[in-house]
Length: 465
Image (cartoon, rainbow, N blue to C red; front, side, top):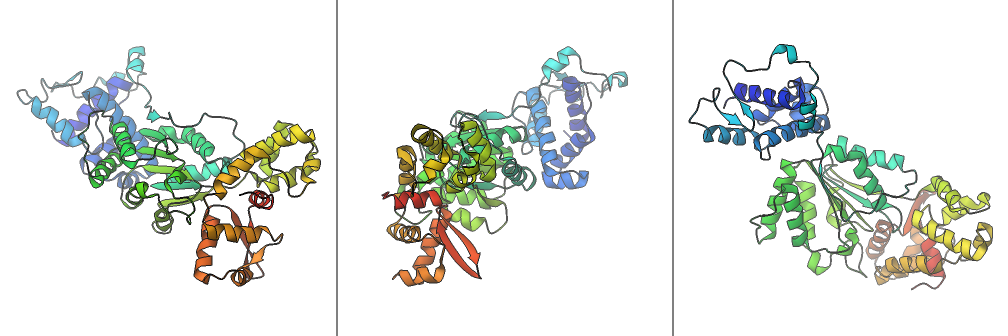
C-alpha cells in the first residue's frame, strides 16, 4: 500500500463515519506519520500546538481502529495496513479488498461531491462517537466540594498540556489538598489523553504488581507475556507510554519511604522505584506521571533541575480563599478569621477539624479558642500531626524542637551555634524539613531565617511526641 492509497482509503473511512472528508490537519497527520515524523514536527509544519495535533490524531486513530477491528496508532499505522493488504493479496487492492466494512473500487475513490458537506445522517451519528479516553479511577477519591484553586489548576494544566511535562510531583503536608486538586485536574484534561489510571500506594506498593496492572491497562491486553526482570517490565511500560498518550496518577507516594530518616530514603523493598522514576523522567515518551506525596523522591529532585520536563509543584494552603470555607462551616466573629487561617496556614483539612473543635467546645467563637496558648488541636488533628512527626529523624526532631521553642524566626548562624554536629549535617536536616513542608524560611536582612509550620509548632509545644 502506498501513501496515496492509504489516504484515499482513510478519507472514505472518515467520511462514512462522520459525513465529512479528512481535514487538512488530518491529512497532515497521516502524511507526517507515514514519513515517521514526530507530532511536534507535524505541529510546527501545520502552525499549531502539539497538544492540538495529538488530540486530532487520537480521534483519527480511534476511527481507523474501529474500522479495522484492532488498535491502530502512530507507531503501527503503516505496518498494520500493510499486513491487512498482504492478507488480501489474492485480489487487486482497488477492486475487492475489504478492510472492515469498506470495499475499494477503482472507479470511485471518493463519495459523490454533492454529499461532501452534507450533515451526517442519524445512522452515521450512531456509528461515530466522540473519542472517550480509557479511564480507571477506582483508587481515586470522590469529587467533593473544592475551594478556589483556579490558579493552581491552571498551572498544572499548563505544565501537562502545553509544556508536555513527563513527570510532576505535587508535594505538601497532609490535608493540604493534593489528592483533591489532582482529582479535579483529571476532569479538566481527561479528553487530552487516551488512557488515565489512578493508583494509590496506600493499599499496595509493590512495583512489580503495579507495573503489571499499568501495562495491562495501558496496552488494553489482559494476557501478556510479562518479563521476570524489572528492566524488561519497564521497557514494556515505556513502549505503552510512547504508543498512546497516557496519564498515570500515583497517590500517597510517601509510603515508599523510611520513617526516622531524612527525606526521600526508600524502604529496602521499594528501592526499585528509583529506577521507575528515573525512566519516566529521563526517557522520551508522550505521557505524564503525576504523583502526590508528603516528601519527594531524591531522583525527582535531581531531575527537576535539568530538562524542565520534570516539575515539583509545592501545594500551599488556601490563604485568604479559606474564608469561604470558614463561612460555610458557620464560624462566628469573622474578624478573627485571618488569625485562624494563618495558624493553620489555610490547610483545608486542618481548618475543618479545628472548626469541629471550636463548635463543640467554644460555641463556634474563634476568639475564645485562640485565647488559649498554645491552642488545643484536638485528638483527630493531633493524630495526623503525630504521624508526620514520627517520620522525622532524631536530628530533625531536635532541630524542629529548638525552632519551636523560639517565637521569632532564627537565623542560620544561631542554629549553627546550637548544634554540635558538623554544619553540613545541619544543612541536610534543614533541607529535609523544608522538603517535608514543616519549616518555612525567608530572607531577613540578607540572612536566611527559619520558623516552624505554626500548627506543628503548637503540636510540639503541647507536648506532642
